Image 1 (spheres, rainbow, N blue to C red):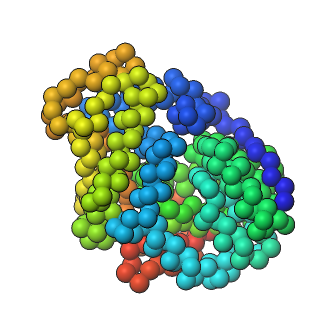
Image 2: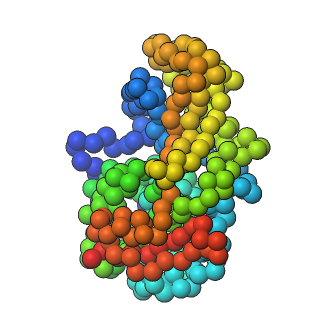
Length: 332
């Protein structure tokens, strides 16, 4: 197996990383994003900053919760349909996974694909990418693996190698739901610009369903999601010298039916002032910081999104409750 970490070039107009200082971005970028968000009319923080080392550990706990159906349901769909999915992808494919994390979702897929040419996992954390080395060396030593460090939303190309045969972008986990519909379309168009006609996209998407099911998934009675959300304030305290009182904020998650998304907020429980990077930020009682969206799709709205971005849906697989879908589409 050949593994080499690569850092692809990005546009000169864009910063090469969109992550906080713990993930290698300049500290002033994190500061800029936090201050800009907290001084906006609707206070907000980019959801990408939820996933520092501590946040990622807490999110792993969320994935084990009974009410958090997304991870479990996606895994069940893959388990039931993996041979069909691999057959749909075809032979001699380079599998590209933006935001690959620990690469665990791609591993069983690559194991069953017919003669995959290469695997390109992309993540902001070199430690996570290197951590996958031992598993691939042991399980698939013949596979060419080319990890790439970077923010997949800002790349001009996937890596240093010229594309070989067909490319398939693997984007599971309903990550697309963190983007607004316009942002999601822009992102898929960005993917398409790095691909060629006939290249594929394997996408995991959460579907519209009963609001009770949705809200339970993001507001569990064990308060794990609350800890995940509040960890962002703890991170700002640690890295920017802020003085957020975590007990003075409450976690709130609700489904917005018109926007078809679950919103996560941190709500101030009183009038207060918070110091962040030598700036005083006022909060009124009941004022919130909007920390994350999770957009849900119907099969029709998903097909429309793909079409607008230059993809044609070829096949999809759902669970028995139609809670979640894995979709395969190709550039037309």
